[in-house]
Length: 224
Image (cartoon, rainbow, N blue to C red; front, side):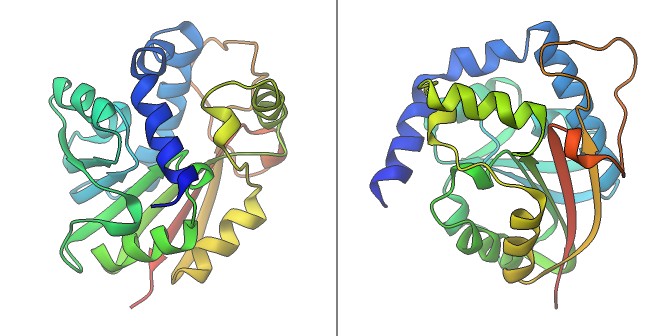
C-alpha cells in the first residue's frame, strides 16, 4: 500500500470523534438529510449492497431500511463506530473488496474517490462485486461549487482530512466511472445552499444548475 493511502487511513482513524461529531451539528444533520435523500432516490428500494469507504456507517444506517447494507472501510476506528450503530462492517480497501463476484445488487461511495490513490482500480473492484446491471451511486464533493471552493481553501490551510483530498468535477468523475466499466444513467445534485447557511425545510435534489451544488450524485450501471 502506498504512503498516501496509509496516511489517509491513519488520519481517518484519528478523527473519528470529530468526523461523527460534525454530523451532529445543525449543518451536519442537514447534510445527512440531503445526501441520504439523494441516495434513497437513486438506489434500488431493496437488495444487497455495500457502502464502500463508509467510515462510521452514517449512510449505511440512513439508507438501510428495506436494503441490506454492509459498510466497508480500511480504518478500524471508523468501523468500530459503525458497529456501535448496529451496522454490519468489514475492514478492507475499496481496491480489494472481500466480496464474491456478482454478489451485490448495488453499491455506493460517498466522498470516497477523492481519497483513493487509484480510483479506477477501486471502481473496477466494485464493478466485479456487482451483478451485471447492478447499480453504483458515487457522490463527489463538487470542486467547482462554492462548497468546493471552501473545501479547497481549508485544504490549503492544512485541515487534516481535506488536505489529503483530490477534488473532482463532474466530467472527471464521470470519465473514471465509465473507464471502469459502468454506464452513467443519471446525475443529481444536492446542497445548493451556501456552505455557511443551514436551510430550513426539506432538502432539494437538482438536475440542472449543478455547478452550485456542493454534492453531485452519479448513478451508473455495471456493464455485463
